[in-house]
Image 1 (cartoon, rainbow over the protein chains, first blue to last red):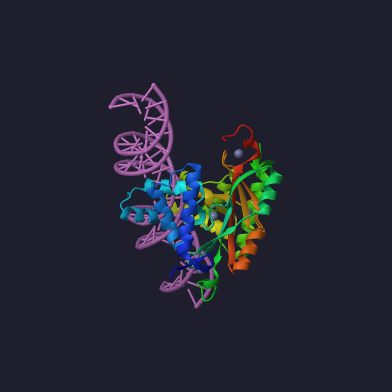
Image 2: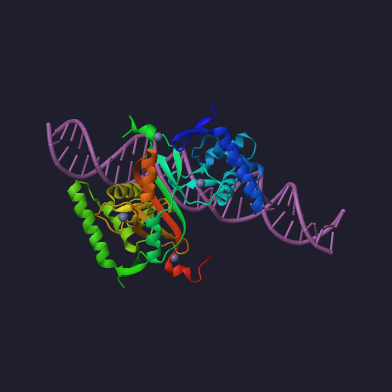
Length: 160
Length: 160
DNA sequence: AGGGTGTATGTTATAACATCACAAGGCGGA
DNA sequence: TCCGCCTTGTGATGTTATAACATACACCCT
Ligand SMILES: [Zn+2]
Ligand SMILES: [Zn+2]
Ligand SMILES: [Zn+2]
Ligand SMILES: [Zn+2]
């Protein structure tokens, strides 16, 4: 039962959540950043199902748990987690998702299934983009790489 | 005076606008799509300065010219232009920008200056992403590639 | 203990972005 | 002529995000 989809496969979810939380705690301690109750809870919520959630979805969960009901509550916690690299923002979906390999420095890339909404995190390393940036003198700081398409499961009998 | 920034350099803007419009017209004719007055005007507006504009900015222009003042007016025209490939949507900015090389099939990539807001279109061809997709069985349909950083002009004395 | 500082939280209001639902007009083909 | 389709117009609403201000609390210094 602790088997949830990650990427497009299954994995031991319980241990995955535990290790992500442990990593976040360790990193915060090292950086002297505070993983407060709200922040920690938001990370847990996002880790629960590895799916991308809108800020207001997260907010609804927080509200139900007594953390507060106003947008800034969710947005601030999410901003913190994104800054620390524990959570990524998916521009295309205006949503947030827990990082699947925190603790490592990485430029994430995402594959988003347009049918089921599943989001898989991959490594980016966009050489073509780096090359274009270098050539034009653009100083690259961050990259957003998001692919849309159909996940393996949705390719059979999917909404075309 | 017909010299505007495109990418991070200058160019002959008048002829660039003219050719983009001609291309749009030809393409629409070929596809039996209608480049109606509103749609054409939106494309012109976006071509005017090669900058990314929000839908409401475009709408304000349309309203001032008597085309209508309600959001759907702008969103519909923009959706059409994006479908036809004459305009690209910049997810990161919730904004739209005229394609700088229409008429060719391409997967655009963008370099966005966080200081001055300038947006340059490049070619994407993200091999790493295609490889990751193939390996995981993801059927890639569309890619969003948007880099943030500093344009050449803003690297000297910029907000760091 | 008292006072200052910084970070985090709580609250109100509003800005900014986007879509739904329905009515009305134009235009080509049956 | 009548129908079907596409396009436009409009009102209402839904969704996402931030500004602005007030409060609480921990921590350090004296
Ligand atoms: Zn990650
Ligand atoms: Zn799927
Ligand atoms: Zn383009
Ligand atoms: Zn710049």
